[in-house]
Length: 102
Image (cartoon, rainbow, N blue to C red; front, side, top):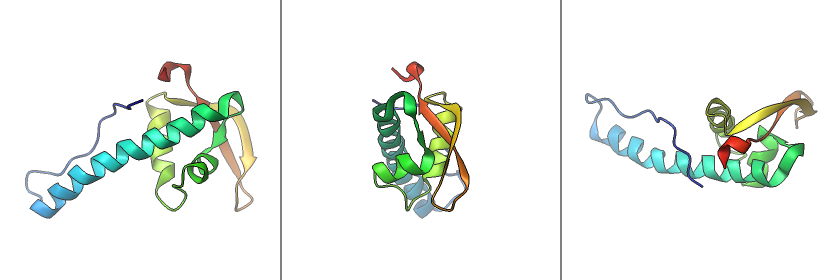
């Protein structure tokens, strides 16, 4: 399952090292989104918080919240209207896999 969203790219004026980093992050970005999306799919109608999805696929130490935001913006996951307490004791939005993702 591949996600097709627009990615930022390096500017023409950026050094070659920045351009190389942009190319490498593009592949990691897709991989991270695919992994998160699969966890939301597996969770079914009960959904997951962004953090729960990240823990399940081993991305909790990265910028997973941005990838989940990207997935919501693309309507690949949708908010359920529910919330759960996160590890810091604060309410976190629950999202579920969108049928539009199929």
